[in-house]
Image (cartoon, rainbow, N blue to C red; front, side, top):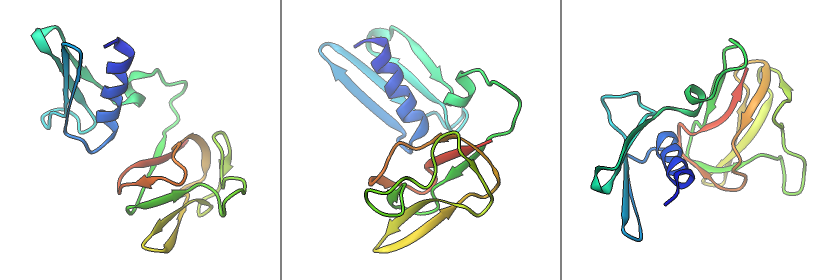
Length: 147
């Protein structure tokens, strides 16, 4: 298993509600787990034969920040199917880099045939958007970041 696959798995565990993940490829087993004594978004890796142990940090801490502008993470309020556009085939509500106003609709989450609009809690520039469209999101999943 190459390092990029392991990093992808670490990022997945760090951003999800998964507490432990074991992946076996050929003779190598990688065990990634979330340690409650660390930051809630951290994950650790254990590779069989005690090859390495890595503690992963959230992506925002790993990548250098371009500026000191605070970033707000908009999280999913409910479980449901995320829609980035008002209707199939239409343009999405917002794109990365768009400037939004407080109260502007960014997404729709469909839960039990009820369409819930998810609005921007503050004005700013969208720096990151979830790539899911038409897929399920869990409460607390990061949908967007607004700086």
